[in-house]
Length: 254
Image (cartoon, rainbow, N blue to C red):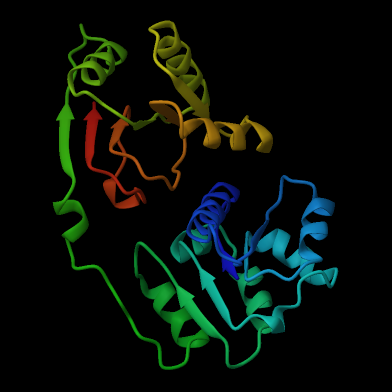
């Protein structure tokens, strides 16, 4: 079982499993909120090698006896730091309480603070700590800051960079849903292929945006997503320490 903090991340993890499992007998399914639970129950009727889900929907299905926790020998908690920040610890503990004692438990986290260390000591037995070397990730990412004057328009600077740099695939972040919609329309008017995702989108619309991103050049977001891209454009100040993406180049437009 693989647990993720958001529906979008869970969907992407399951997509990766399906890709890796092509031409094999390995099976998987996803259990997340925002989607019809009866369809997920139907898919669970057949045994699966992998179940990917969010904690809330997973617990719903456990309580309905549709998921048997003692049948899993490995539990993966992805983006553990984000799960704690989002208040999922009580749900995590309930899920782990139903798993057999000799289970294999893996935590993945972009940061390692005292809270995670404390929880690891509580939940893990003789844990092995594997970490990326300090600075290794950011050393491989080229970072540029483009500052604009009062006479300059941020959007025009963004367009210049998109055209200059030969961007093949990128995510553009802004800090409000309104500004994301505005930039999306402007980019569409300029002939760019772009999809937007934000909190006002339904789950169906978010999934369509995720699927469409495989075919379009740009994606606009007002919150962080887990994606593999070459470029990130930040239209407002954001610390790179909270970017969980595989990325080649980052450009700040301040």
